Image 1 (cartoon, rainbow, N blue to C red):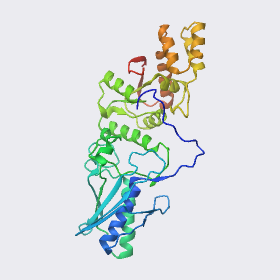
Image 2: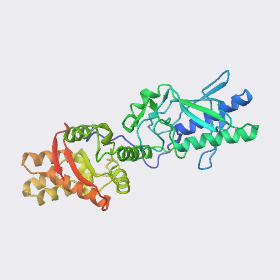
Image 3: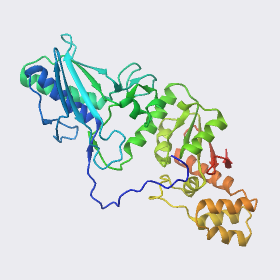
Image 4: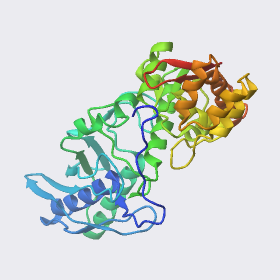
Length: 369
């Protein structure tokens, strides 16, 4: 991400978008098929699973192998029309017998990460296979075990070839999930452009920060402002929340799960939207109101001619440059109003808030604290 860069185009709301399946759903399908092969010698292909919402989709296998006391099945993740970095990844499940009475236990194979920091819904040292996918896999095993008269004591190893490289494009390293991807999903379904995964990662970043005792976190709209705020305050990676356009998603979660200090950092145009009261900063869902900026400029002393120029500017950045030439602290005014929006959203939560506004090069152009 870069601040004030063009936002990714999102199809019109009325366009038919194809849903996809989470890594958790794919892992469940692979586990069920591999378990069937372990018991009967035959893989289920296609394999049907039960999702938490009651749907029963079927998945085709992309790989099936048996090796002595284990069986492996693989499903290629189809994220539908969502721009998911794991789209096309091969999710493998290798199953083998567990000790009597052990139930279903999980292992991280190549390309699946391991939890190394507290604050996530899994203990440190556990494979990054989230609770709902675990429940789905246990339910699939129990269904087959009951049908085939097996005790269902099983070791399930999930792997994703190339997952460690894919994970560098996710928030996993920052969250302390090392060695690969997380196996995710709460419904089993990927809803295109729902942004749920991004907001979920913001929440997990806050959880990890709290669990590791951090007292200062920063949410940035993009990589330029993130680098600037990290340098300004000497923050390490664990304190940086990938807020992006989702100021509301970050602030509302912090309201319920506070951290003592929050810095919000971003480009001028993005934080002008926050200053106007918008909590979703995406260009498709909020716009910079140049008339509003002109009114703010007038409030802080802009002459009529400058006010008119700002009102007629092409972009928020152009308005900022006009104010800079005139020596008018429009960046500070925007920062102060963005801070006011943040405080109103936090609704009395015990969090000290400051705001940093930067230009395209990451230079500070406005601050409020």
